[in-house]
Length: 508
Ligand SMILES: Cc1cc2nc3c(=O)[nH]c(=O)nc-3n(C[C@H](O)[C@H](O)[C@H](O)COP(=O)(O)OP(=O)(O)OC[C@H]3O[C@@H](n4cnc5c(N)ncnc54)[C@H](O)[C@@H]3O)c2cc1C
Image 1 (cartoon, rainbow, N blue to C red):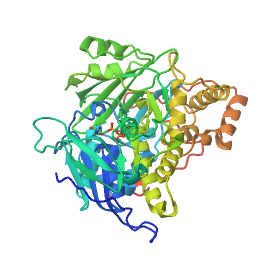
Image 2 (image 1 turned 180 degrees about the horizontal axis):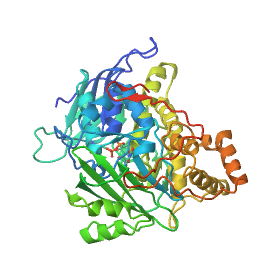
Image 3 (image 1 turned 180 degrees about the vertical axis):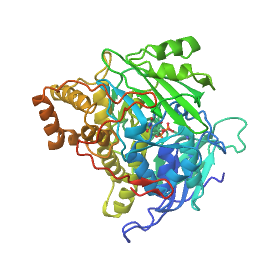
Image 4 (image 1 turned 60 degrees about the vertical axis):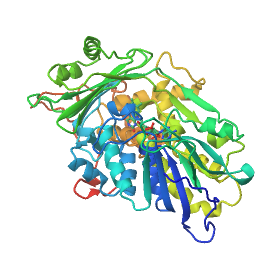
């Protein structure tokens, strides 16, 4: 790769509504990095994405994405954002083997309060591996004429711009001796550097090296572990569900598991354990853990299925929020996105959607940047990003306090009361399609958590209380063998019309 040494400039910022700028560099080629590159391609003449791994031509696991072996659900809010930046992606993934699932009908979900009522709805969940999603997104981004993806490029630090108040690019070191190109010491100048290097981000160290403060962190850890394996889904297996989720029920039962149908006629099965009750990665231990779940449905399913891979484990799962938005001094010319800023306990499936929200914020910020005069523009971006991901953080971090051993800042009384109220909402969602629908809209980040306190939910909870049903969970909605009615009735005021069609991609 050519090392570029040209004077950084700020383009013609300020002269037109959406000025084009010179060169942007993205550090990290996972979802947050790829989506950032997609956005930057609209605003910069050239975009270079630097990824230290090497990508495969096909959807395949790679070292820099160890979580790819575990079940990944893309929330509806995130899927819609991806469609906005990459129209038709949903259809492409389906043609490549992803199974489109009607989330409230096809997924049997055992909440801590019982099985959620099921009904045909309009929330789409793609049944596929994480590697397929990344492959689809990467293919589209790589095809953009002004985006260049450099693999095997390990970024080692930031270059200080003149005067030290801004970043002027990155410098690299080679990852392995067998790399075709030696990046050691190469410098790459950029008008903007977007850091998307994941949960173990080195940005705090890079800022320190330039004389800046390290951001404060909020860490909330409920000590979750994953163990996952692919199975061939048995064609003779008769059930009315396509996906199955036995949610953890803390504090009494920190164990859970999920079965997701993925491309190639396979199931991706992930077992989850909180409070340090990590699911084992040996054959006997994995099966025993599956058997110990609150419902036998998952164990019965995998007992009938053929394992295709070894069992993979994962334990880096704490909620970690780096408060760049609070720094007194933050250089211009650099911003951070994705897990590098806000990483979640993955059981709530928010990380990819948060990455997509970050891409939306980046797009807006770049469109409006001409109106932010003077230094501090990077901090403005980090403030916008913190606001955009606040609801996801609230849901994830709040739920984790239900586990016995959770470590983090003390929780207030209001938050504890909110937890009790949410339990009431979950119980109502085992009976009432309308309440389940509203709950899903919040969990899929389509509505803010405050929507759970709206008059529709309150009225239904009050009605149930009067009718003596408050606190009682329905027994319907669970997995049923073929021929048994498991889908709830529709007499709860839910009017649905799907917002998606696979052939056209999404109409969200
Ligand atoms: C077990 C598990 C399950 C999960 N399940 C879900 C789910 O169901 N739904 C969901 O939405 N999210 C889920 N997530 C979260 C999701 O994986 C991440 O939020 C998502 O990958 C976005 O992260 P990112 O792009 O910011 O960082 P990452 O995915 O961590 O990628 C960082 C990239 O940067 C590269 N890199 C790092 N350092 C350098 C460097 N110095 N130079 C060049 N490149 C570098 C890495 O190789 C990597 O490719 C899960 C996570 C885990 C751990």
